[in-house]
Image 1: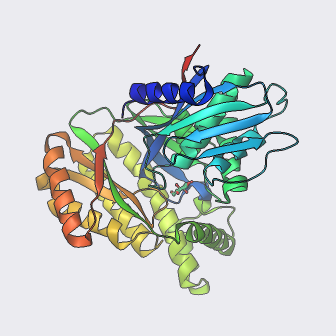
Image 2: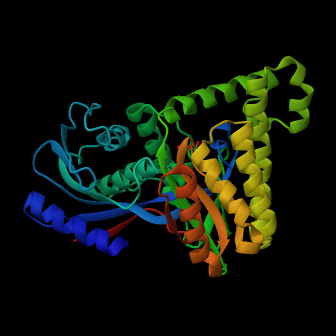
Image 3: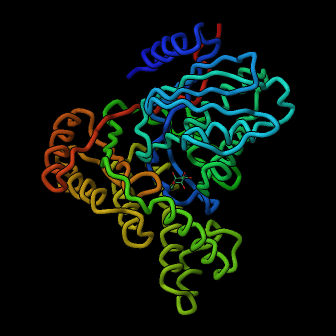
Length: 389
Ligand code: GLA
């Protein structure tokens, strides 16, 4: 569904729900991470890009003190007050918006009640940062409604805080940053410590980014995420560094005898993944696609073996892509996002997209009994106001 179609649908539904057209229409994209997984909360490097799938919100201030949110995807409506303060509540997805309102800087005087319709072309829980896109879209709407433009980094941190405090997920900064700072036709090399970004052009028409949704989400994803984070912190303490970003493979090897196997392997993933991410950014800049492919496969192996966040369905996708290989037009493939289901990302030769898609569909279904959802995306731009009237 194109952004225009989404915007029209949200506008129409808003008018039907609230009796007048919306004043604001905003959009925020999801993301796919090309490489640099589980490195953001270790002060490391990530290389994501925004995708052409969005959360769109149609909204307008109301004269009351209540916020009413209607989700097109779930058909649910959330209603809550903003004073004296915003509380967590049902339905679950509304917490991403509640959290953003709660974290929005004072003075919030101008922020009383508002009405909104939320439309999405991102699979919910599909590992493409649909929750970050909802937070960022909500923050963009609040900026528009209050006339208070936030610094982009402050805005990303505010959205991350919403996710920590209202959704209980101790996520890193990659998803919110990407949804705000992404540039069309570019991936972003993000240094999660200094919070500086370097755009990396991804405009070679011969190369296509393919996203393969396994259509599975294992339940332990969230609890295992929090566990990985604390295992990394323990490993950093054992190595005497502030964050795993500061450790080298040599120092890790030297500490092997006094470290347990689990923190050792978690650290080995993070340290090597940071290195792979920097190398991949250089290789993309040099159009050295076979190098990029090798790094993607190595990233997947490290996530499967050392970090243990893959799952049989993601491994199956990567195995099929690897077997099609360079001869069949596949450059590289790996799981993307937090893991335990969700999506894999593959770089492929554009002329082979259809053949590869058919092959992946056929073999994935044969081996797992499930149908994958496969689509391609050019790198999209960041969140923006689409219309105001
Ligand atoms: C989720 C989190 C991100 C990041 C990835 C793993 O998407 O929201 O902050 O940690 O997992 O790379």
